[in-house]
Figure 1 (tube, rainbow, N blue to C red):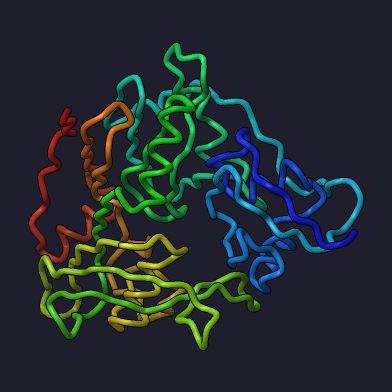
Figure 2 (tube, rainbow, N blue to C red):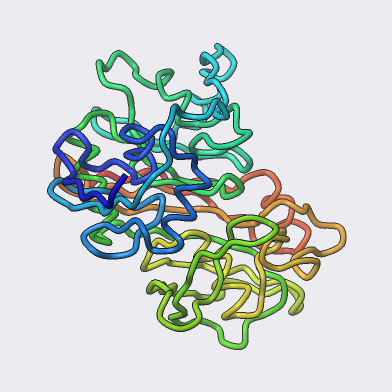
Length: 325
């Protein structure tokens, strides 16, 4: 198969690049796709891309020679949504109107499927139709181990508007993290390019070497400190790179997020505290698809509440969602 160039059609607009490949080239595994992206063989409008790159109508995708044959039978079969799962999903709802649903995603729940993932949020969204003809759609994502606000669009129009807001950086995202140690500065801006790399432990994000990195900026501010052993940070990512906050805290601030053994090793754990990742998507402010703006905040997950109590941090009040027209 020679190198091919395809134009993104209207039906594929706002799709993630990996989903686009699953539809058009089902024989390509996720691992093979990531390798082709990492080596720059697949490009979107001539530029490097990632699996979660959102496509727009009219963009050109460069496709290198691909393996032929049927798709390998490695993907787990999605199971039907149980009544128990449906009830659990409804309890996650922070806000709902005719265009948007905001959830408080728990720690440990994957947003999308992948190798060895049998249960994920995207596979259960039919339970959140609430009489709508269309199935709710993801417009952004959170890592499996990150908790907090996750927005869903309830129809194609809302999905297009929200996806554009996230691509254009009109969505303001605020995260809370507990990091081990105390940063040198109370606050500031981290401007550290990042790159995805392979290795014996799988795909990782790392500070970029040379010209292969992508721009990554995070603003941070110290909220409270526990005797220099741990710090409560407010983080605002101005770009949306994979594991951006985790790498910026570990590499730039030299204070790994508590529980983040992937990027902080043993230094990311403190005796007597939960080993779960202490990163929470606290709030999102975004233009509402029907006009005005929407701001939603999520309460802390149980393991972070436990840590707040142990460290003596004041447990915060969670404001009600605000829709401004």
